[in-house]
Length: 348
Image (cartoon, rainbow, N blue to C red):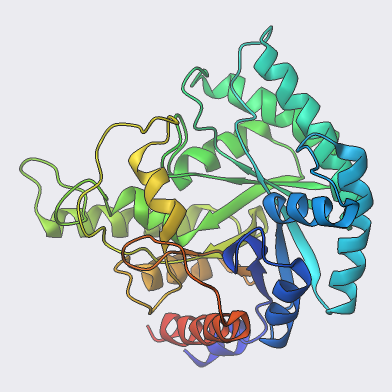
């Protein structure tokens, strides 16, 4: 245990800008709170950049006005430098892979990727988070998904950039860590790795927001069966994923929904786990019920000691918006959660 504690003490800490305040909260206030709490880096959320760009230019900026976004991005880079924060990653780049080769959607995906690469250059980050697609009309063929991601990885490599591929637990084709790991291996590029996430792992393989228990329920399966399957998955993660292929590790818990969510997608096509993710994800030890410590232990067993990033979407147990009166207090609480998480994960 002592050896684990010694190596864990050097783990760098990160905070997603989208996890504190709202997009309308001045970005400099977010950065100040994150920095003063002791975090060393941020995931720059695109909604925050877009909001900052509109304020900076005194005009409503389009999400695809990359000239304006890059000008604002240079200012964000300077703000982060003044706050002693590294911009670890730009996020979230969504619905990229799996489109029909001749489709307008695929053209748009690559148009967006070129714009986001420009933004990465402007803000001074070298990592792009790509979430596994949740678009319905995409192919699930692994070779196609891998080919698309390989093309993006090659575009990023021209600038010395990396691609962090994350399983979104409501994704159409790759909802589990093993899915994205198999795809990453097919891509076979040195600059693609994993963005692992405690919520996406436990929320997809152990929990279910559509059941009254909040757990995955299968006919004839007991709670012990569920726990055993999940522990087997974590054991496989710990033994098969090389530490150097984990680029970043996102941390959050989840509230058990007060009422089971409907099983169907909503009017926007968002599946229940996606809706759950949007506002029912507190920091660990703050009312959630996922086995977060178990996931952290598995990731640490790979030897990974890279960025731990607090990425929460906390609307309280009812999933309602916060008033955000105390950004600094929230950031300090997140650092305390991180420190406790490492302590409890080392006790094994």
